[in-house]
Amino acid sequence: MLNHLKILWHQGKQFIPDVRSVEVPGIFRGRPIISKVTVDGAALAAICPTKAIGLSPVSIDFGRCTFCGECSLKFPEKIQFTKDYRIASNVRERLIVKEGEEGRISFDEEEIRKEIKSLFGRSLKLRQVSAGGDNSCELELNAANNVQFDMSRFGIDFVASPRHADGVVITGPITKNMAKALEICYEAIPEPKIVVLVGTDAISGGIFEDSDQLDRSFLKNHKVDLYIPGNPAHPLTIINGLLDLTGR
Ligand code: SF4
Image (cartoon, rainbow, N blue to C red; front, side):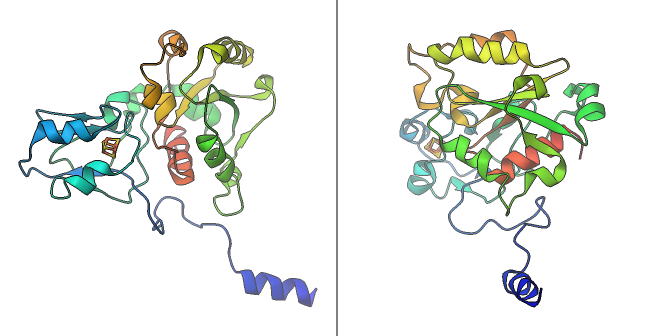
């Protein structure tokens, strides 16, 4: 008993008490800030491997951004990345930050279906489908449930069967050979259900956007309830996005 108490004292609290506002250590690129300084727009846009940088006004679509950091390295006076990890939204267009904007990425509360908050606010079970993913976002989803981030304390868990799930979490750019499996999984989830996209590849196709090996028709046929950006998405971004969607 004494030994157990010693171990507890030595280790301290391993979980992050407040996932809403914690300083992320080390190198982390969250929400970008774009200044109004004038730069060579064409040169800036040409740097980006995923056409995430728009012009007139200068903007970054972090549903497309790989967070490689090249733009801020070459044009530090124009683009800086903050450590704000609360960058998920239920509206795709809100993932686009324009020059001069500094506010937090927001949700459109009117767009959130009523049953999401009333039914899933205290318990949300999710089935994950890696639709051509590279295992990076999948690892971060796994990390969201480790002892540090402890997502299950909010009643949010992953389940093995879509029959037991309230929604599907999609990672990867949705390849042709996973399109049918994804549809079957979605059909097996009872109504009402949610669709969550995690990571740049899932949201826009990322660097695979122009590949003829993708079949993203699923996204045309089903409403997406939550976009969680990142390449890969950070566990804090994942957890905060789900908490915001379910009204916690
Ligand atoms: S950090 Fe994003 S916007 Fe900047 S160059 Fe890389 S992919 Fe493009």
